[in-house]
Structures are given as structure tokens and as C-alpha cells.
Image 1 (spheres, rainbow, N blue to C red):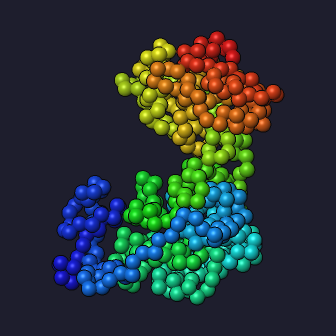
Image 2: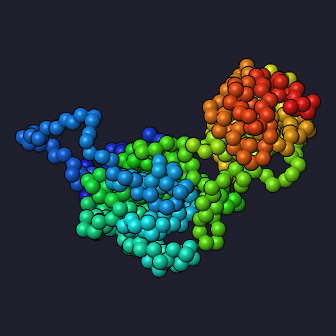
Image 3: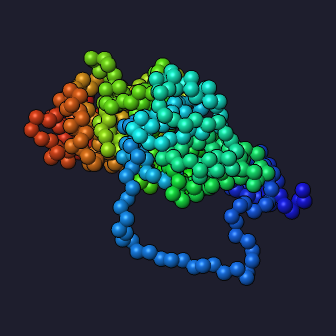
Length: 457
């Protein structure tokens, strides 16, 4: 092959280079450039100046055509993350670590959708038919009318999907497909991008809703070029900490729903089980709360979730104190420790600090600042918080406690689970209704330190 017909494509970010190099100049990865053909992909515009386009036909924003109803699969947590069900003709990209349960989740989705009357197909490029049947038998869904196939050739898959009409099609996974229009091997950037583009085009042309399974890199990002994430309508990630049976389905992008919704599942011997009340699972079962533990009333999407934040402050045995965080942001912990030292007089410079979100959940909202601070203060002073108290609020750099959204829903969830008091911003007291929890309003972090040290709430 002539040298001028070759390109070098980064297998990490998809950047194209004219010559080989040891490091990709776009993403900085080493030894990631692969040699690929420069042949134009199918459907590419030819460099001809004589051909004329037909022009565009513009439309208005208003339409008399009703929206098609969503396909309710029957897996409530999956439908919640999708925005109320799968939109016909949409493309969804699902990623997750190896072994987290992506295939198990999608087999459960297809089986329940088939039982609800949907026409579904499960096409696997990684497993044989008998392997899928064995999993379905273990999960108790072997009687569902799901069309199974094991294939990796894109041309055969497209021909079949154009011939047979389905409502939902699962492609497991996009990295195993290959197109004969390209010389690159399966799993390369060129193949992943081309196969994804053809499948998305099929879905948009009145085809089925397509769910693509994507592998993830060591950093937790979906492998392949980021352009694949721009092609699809929704990007879902299936997360799970090793050692925990819980799995979190989270939407990073969703054109038909909210991007902060989560679905909670529990992995068992018979597959995944939906968790309708995550708060009861993420909370500790002990009757007496130890020093350094605080219950945070958070919001994940449209549902309130209570989770226990644990902190441990111990004398440092080495010259440099350690800072270890699990389930929270390292930067917010550093900011919180600086505020406690500068505004409240609590020094952590000679102490190791460990912070953990119990249950394997990862918290991203700033409303967890006050709960993390309360856990740190409780551990540093060796004073436990009351058993029936929840904490939430955002902390500013000046030490003030700032209001957070949906305080009423947080307090209602706390009341439902047996909590009778809350340590929250002053604005939350206006959201309390008769019979709800008692709110101890606070406006400054110094007041929180004083209340915990004196056991006064």
C-alpha cells in the first residue's frame, strides 16, 4: 500500500496524524497510534465541483404529528434513567467496567420488554447463543420472546434489521463489530466510529431503538473516539464498586430526559434486582452512631437518597499527613479542611484524614459539604451526632452555610425513614410542615462546631 494512502489514528482519542509518533499530540497517550487506510468511508462526499445539491427544505418549530409513545421496558429503574422509557428510533450508548453486569442488565431489559409486547433482538458479538441462554435460564427469563443472534459483521446485521422489524435492538458490543468497507481491525477507532454511525443512521431512518454496549478504558471513560458519544442520544454508565452488591445506572447525556437521574440495582445469584428504596441500603444498620458518622440527605435526580458519610481524623505517624477520599471529591475535602482551620480554629495539619461514603455511592452535589464537615468535626472532637439527625447544606469559603434546592423533599425522606431532626441551612426551616422533622437552623460553620462540641441540637 502506498505511503500517501495511510493515516495514523490515535486509539485513545481518535485524533488523526499524517505520520507515526510515539505520543499522541492531542491526548498525550503513548504508543496509541495505529496505521489505518486513508480510503474514504462509505457515503463520503466526493470532491466534484459539477454536482449540485438539491438544497434544504426548512420546517417550522410547530408540528401536528404527535410524538410516538415511549417503549416502557418494565425495568422501572432503567426506564427512570431513560426519562420514562425508551424513545423509538433513539440510540443509547451503555458503558461500564468489565463484569459489572451490563449484559445481565440488558438481558433483563429485553426479556421484560418482550413480555410487555415489544419486539426485541439481542445481538452479541462476544458471547455464543448458548451462553446467553444459560444466563437467561439462571435469571428466570428464558421463556421471554427475545430474538437472539451472535454476529460481528455489520453488513449482515444491517441487512437483517432492515428486513425484520424490531422495537429495541441490543448490540453487545460496538467494539466487536467490523465493517468490510474499512481495512482496520475490529475495535479500532475507524471501525467503532463507522459501525456506530451506520447503526445510528438506521435508528434515525425509522428503525428500532438501538442500545450499544461500549467498553471502558482504565480511567472509566467509554473506549473509542468521543465522537461516538456525540452521535447517540443518551450515554449511560453502569457503575459498581468491587466488594459491594449495588450497581448504579447513571445518565451522563440524555436528549430525552434528565442527566442527573440514577437507577439502583442489587446484584444477586439470579441477576439484578431493582432497589426501590436506596436510602435503606446505604444507611448503616447500627443503633448507636459512632463519632465521625453523619447521615446526608441528598438528591439524585428526582429522588431523595439518604447515605452515611464516615470520617476518621487520626494523628499522623509520618511527616506528611494523608488525605484519602472514597466516594467524594478530593478538591472539596481540601477546601473544607481549609475552611475548618481558617474559620473554626480546627487544625488538621498534623492529622491523617479519611473520608468515606458508605455503600459505594459517589456523591457530586455541593449539599454534602455540611454533612462531610459534621463528620470531620465529630471525629476530631470524638463527639457522636444524634442517631436520628440528618445533615445537608453547602459551605462557602467564608464559613457560611448556604441554602440548597429541594430541602422539603430531603426532609420528607428523612421523616419516612424515622429521622426526627435535621441540621440544615436557615432557609430549610421555612420548608418544614407540621409533623415533619425538627430543623436546627444554622448559618455559620462555627455554630455547627459549637453545637457538636456541646451536644446541643
